[in-house]
Image: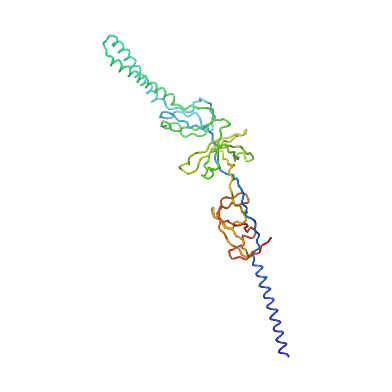
Length: 348
């Protein structure tokens, strides 16, 4: 009997330890499972808000230069000076130009004397018609040469074309200025000619049109929002960077503006597009326009890692361009603990 009793005790002990082992294995398996929660994928119409930045400029900016070349004698203004229409801003040394005027004047005077003399001779039949016509032509040529010299002397100085502010000085007194070389830059002080110019991509260019409203924020006035309107849209790309220039007219709303103030532009468009949106928490990895998410498999215990192409990010959502065909839910909570062979437990 004793061997039989010992056998029963041994069997009972094995059953007990086996039960304990199974409980521990089950508990370990449960502890290893990552608790996750899913959220739905949504498809909706989206109106994108395009954001750009640039600097304030005036539409009446003028690059001022001399018509003729010469040595700069005086520059009467400096950067930041306010000027009035017609005010002299800079002059050339007139020594050479005055000499040219005198030379042209003397040539014109001689031609006039020659014409008077040949007319008298022609009247006395002592000169031919051809001689008279040649002198008349010469007199007209020298007269026009004098007019050119006087005109050049007039533009050997720079005058303000309108009321405004000198925003940049490119040359100094004593420098040799070639004809048309930029010496000063100025802009008008009108309160309604301020714009911001910036380049946009071809996709954004297709969405924009003249008259679209823009919200403008300027660093100099952090608590103010200014209204802007698209004034111009380029019809051809800039050859240097491939973007299309857009000009937004900004209304100062009583504030003082200056050229060069930094501005942020938010453009609203009427164009709507279908987009697939997922919560931003669902994205586990990202590299430029590529990202990865996790999907819950049908067994509710395993997951699949999926590569997606990102269109853009807005607020707490990510717009997905491709990779979510026929997907209705993505994992959000617990996604940072997942691997491709992870076991999961779905929390409702």
